[in-house]
Image 1 (cartoon, rainbow over the protein chains, first blue to last red):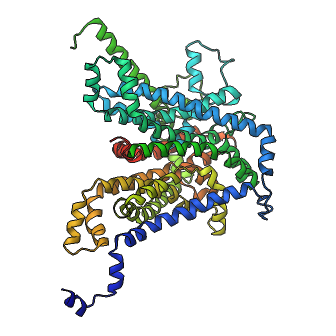
Image 2 (cartoon, chains in turn red, blue):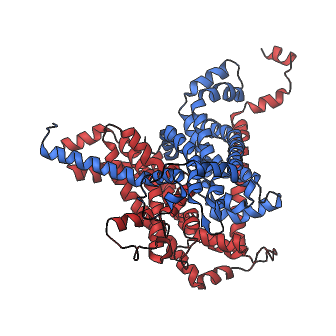
Image 3 (tube, each protein chain N blue to C red):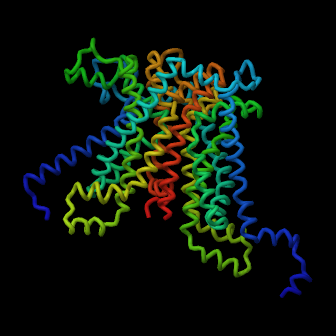
Length: 309
Length: 282
């Protein structure tokens, strides 16, 4: 065999031989993906952190290092503190509302009933339709003159036309509106995650608990909840990360207004860094997202590791 | 067990009312989209009309306007081109990467896979500042090709993760048999693993495409020329002239863009879920 192989050399046999080593071919195959991500996520990530420590604006691309002074500037700015506060309210408000709706919805969809597939398809819509498009629909529903919500409230006699709320023009109501829209967008995802978790709990475990005398609440909170906790954590991690860093809902519905009442970190970073061209302060605002993201990522890694044991 | 008593009848009623409530909550904005896009302006902007149905006969006026007087078809085409290019880039990089991480790199592969997936969580609102500089350096500012360059930064991690799970679920014996029969390692991937994972590849194609359609932040940041915009951005930002919102046209455009994504997701939902939860449920 060896003699035959040597007498008829294949083209570039050495090359072939190297490519048949698992580790070599393995690294070669994974390299393009890693390079792409390193160059366009890893490097920009470091650049963003450096920007936040520099004096870089589009008018002064000098990159000079200024330490933490950008952070000092933005922390002293009351609008930024308002923005930071808004971001937490927006994120946790919509996550909690979304999770409650999700838990309840999953509970309903767990039981088979005629038309369940169609109901599921309709309930999933808010999460799948591009959020920018759904947001414009909501903006139209919250319109100051032709709001269908106000029309209904007036028709039901709850408010009169003169005192009908201006949803996106009043600070508290505008915040409520963006939270509702975000919770609305998130709750189908929560339903799906809950369902995936609950259906994965083996029926015999639940049966065994029932036989042993566990009631409804005990089954729910001491058997099912711990078992679906890993999958729920991943769902919540996604929800928090994407809400905390989002700008589309706020950008389209309120432009951060009225008077900064709905401005969130992503939106403020965009306004300062892109629109006004003050890149370094914009980056500093965006970098404020990192501590929370880090906590979230560590939580997620812990769960993934626990899963492997 | 199931006796038809007053209590069960009451339970059934409350169950179905709750389901109805949820459906209305989820779907009303889309119903509103549909009804707005087919209403005449006279009907839309009259507060004495009941808004929930047609008071005047429905009209196609908004759709006609959209296709004839706006760049709507250009945006559709842009989105199609962006989607196709990003899907191609994603497949070419994510397929071999996922296979390698699932089969060839052992325990390091698992860690690397998680690492790649975590980059999916790095937010666009942090990266857009440096990326807009990268794009300016490359001369791609204000062009939809900037999006072709940037979108793979989230589709590659996502799809690598999805495909990794898929390859792991394939029986390794088939490729081993091919290698014993004289196939090279790479040949086993091309001739065995890829044909066997066509359903997974199809899922990835669908999701890459929908992810590009759903993206808004990068498009908003990098593209401001009207004729370069993808459909989501065009509909959301360019149908407003002056301060006036043309709700009929906006809702008609949103409707057309939303329908394909909604259908695709509903067909592939289960795969999507098992993909992102990455076997967290075993």
